Image 1 (cartoon, helix red, strand yellow):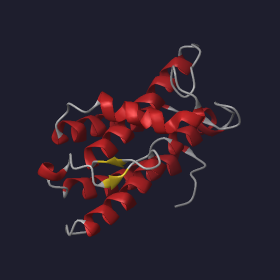
Image 2 (cartoon, rainbow, N blue to C red; image 1 turned 180 degrees about the vertical axis):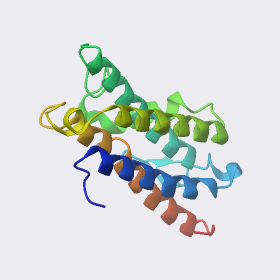
Image 3 (cartoon, one colour; image 1 turned 135 degrees about the vertical axis):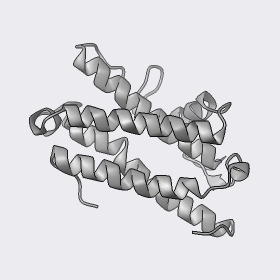
Length: 171
């Protein structure tokens, strides 16, 4: 998929990648969602499908937090308070822990809600506000949205398909 360069392209990428991911997630048996049989985000770790959802949800919520802070003129502690960009494996572990007590259907609902909020954020923006200036370092707001939503959705879908195949589940 090409990197979006406009509001319309970003909306299309968000909707397309999320629909494909959601279709894959809907076929994961809830009873298998907490099995740590998927390669984790930190080197040498294993995670579950539920952890993968927690990871996506964690990044979506951070993106929304950054966007709300920036819109309010507040400083953002990138990527998250207490974490540096070179500690993303540790941040992934935090996301897993933050959502460890949630049932798989609840995680799906929360990811749906976060995705809806991201779509609303993009819909409220313009090409100029999303792509007309640097928002974080040299990245535009639209590019940061894509980095933390549509791109990880596509990656997660590929990981899920490989996991399902390895587990003997229908792909």
